[in-house]
Length: 127
Ligand SMILES: [Zn+2]
Image 1 (cartoon, rainbow, N blue to C red):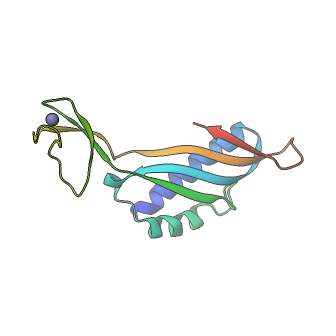
Image 2: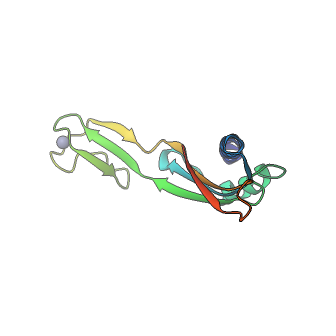
């Protein structure tokens, strides 16, 4: 199951970041996934709720930003978002576009409770 591998890697990365920051538990995992990854969000949420068990991310909320396909025109250098799999450059009509985004799988940030701040304040970590 593809989504499980994605969820597992998010939990692993978030756990490493949280440990590095001395956090007790992760409250939010914010990630960015390109549409080319073809991750099904229902399956991802399901996989995430399994993957986080017994980790610092056990109570974490998963927030996913969808990243659309980005292309750069080989003829006029125009950078644009590919919608409905229409690869042609909207400016000059050339079909030779270079893929510049849409296949990312990134952990954007995590929010975590840090131990030595007894108010349970949240620290925002950026990767
Ligand atoms: Zn163009």
